[in-house]
Length: 246
Image (cartoon, rainbow, N blue to C red):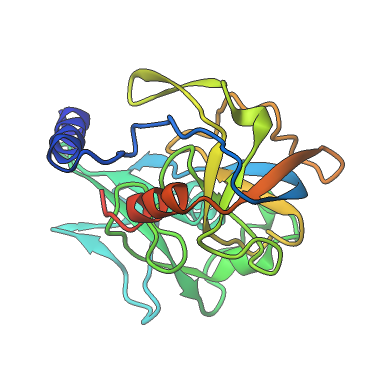
């Protein structure tokens, strides 16, 4: 039902403004100035978990345990660690309500996640959360995460707000919200991550870690060619879509 309501709102907005929505993957590459760049990629997602009646609480930066209505926000250790690693989590509550919580920063260690990630990501242990405004969470500069559009980047290599075109993504079919889409190859630099350095990007794939992109090789040796695009129309539309809360 919530997906139907979301689609209805997007459709109404599209009809009223005649502008692209997050369901439109129809940008075309023109002769606008573009800069070639070599990248490698991983992907990240917003997992969905059922709230637990006991477990580890999600806390805010003030060390307050988060609640949703009358329910404390509790997860198992593994769920907590994966939520901290991914940067956002959607939690289902009794009655069918679902709420997303987002990375808010780090303070002191709360949970030891080395069981799942080794000692490579010690910052994960100290993550704190906040309620998100968008159903998939938010990245940097109040950008909403948009499935199959948002990428996390190193801003020293790709500035936030940039448009990146990946030829190997164009024409790839993917399933999302029960529909099949064909990707146009365009992505938006709207997030960052502690492990995202240099030519490494992280593609946001909604609520699932699974994806159809063969350019995502999960290793720095698996590089591919991409382009930084200076197309005002594309940049304006993708910026607008990432400034909307869904």
